[in-house]
Length: 92
Image (cartoon, rainbow, N blue to C red; front, side, top):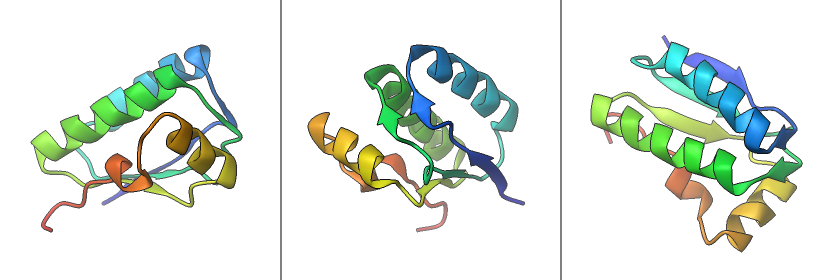
């Protein structure tokens, strides 16, 4: 069963700490993160997402960032990250 988590609108340092806590609880299960409401994506939150994605890949569980908002997509581009870098599908 895939867990689903809606990301906060503002993913700054305090939000990245909350995100880490939520991801820690979901570890060991496939997860889909809904990024449609994200209007600010800071470097700390991005680092949290990238480390989580690597952890999910190591555990061989899918980690998907879905419905990336335009602002989140622009923040990724500014930080030199492609949206595909945030997703890993088990079994592919």
